[in-house]
Image (cartoon, rainbow, N blue to C red; front, side, top):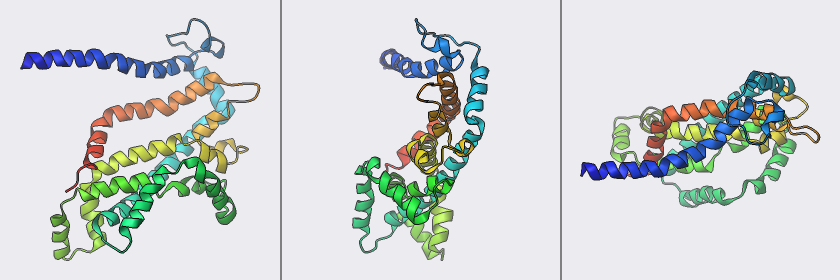
Length: 278
């Protein structure tokens, strides 16, 4: 039996290791290109070993975009969006999971149906609403507010709260606990893995968002842009700063890749926790 498992493990690694290397190849090339002078990036044959111009490219990137400031902007926007969105989607998910009210099924169906609407269909009406009605363009609230009510987050948190034992919540009610206390002190702590997984997903969504910040933030104030928009500004009509783009991509990718490697077990546990119903 152990011999069969060992042989199966070998064949599994023979199949998966090349796939892993194929997935890692673009990331390695991105890092290599970030260390090369721009004239060498498109040289033939393709360079596979790092050079020594990483900090030169980083200095040029900061000179062109004030990238260190835009990274801080992206971190702030992503953190604010993640905290507020997780709170709102948790509240909505708890309500859909634990309360029965008139129209709840229809309302939840509408929430799920919005997942099928392409983003590009709503982006123009959303921009008109932000620009004409609320008049908050050129502010970070314009970046954060429209996407707070995340339909996928509502569905995911609803599934997580459905996995909680109903008897536990009923016991708390019998002991005199109010709904807010039950939610914050009992329900939320029990779904921490799911909240952690959702937080990571939402943070990366906000971190990588390009189109919406590009629309609502003024390109004239480069220090106020988010990092993806700042990198996009390096692509001009007559010049493309490939070295700067590669350095910026490395700075935006590698820290979160390392973070995910260390937190992958918690992330997978959180995803799995949302798929179990009591």
